[in-house]
Length: 193
Image (cartoon, rainbow, N blue to C red; front, top):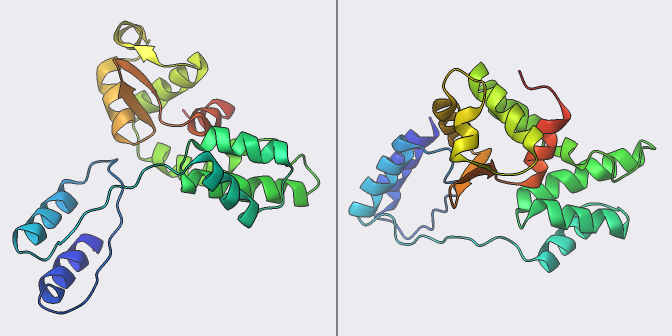
């Protein structure tokens, strides 16, 4: 429904002096959204595109301090794990603050703040892809093509492609790894199958 709303509003607002701001993630791929944005661009309704860089460590520190009262060591761990993602930093900072308010160590289980988002992503995957993720998390590092092919799942390449398409993994320089250390930690903490 959101894509249809974007298309309708874009057609109508293209003729009016209105700023219409959209945000999107590149993963998972959305062909319907890409097609809609392509049509709007061809009609002149899409005037600009901004690609945002990750936040600097200083900006992540400031965000964490604005959102949560956690010790400096916890803040630095959040900066390390969030790798510039405001979403990851926010969720983990809030989780750390909740843990501290509940009398648990504020730094314990920093990956728990992502639990809901990861459970949702995992719920959309096949069992084979979830098992693949469990092996990748246990490895604790990126896997090369040979290692991916050797995993004991019926079709390792298909499982890797599905898990990568979910946005939880990425392939860089021939290695399949988690997009963020926080995601790997969250998957590694629980059985996902």
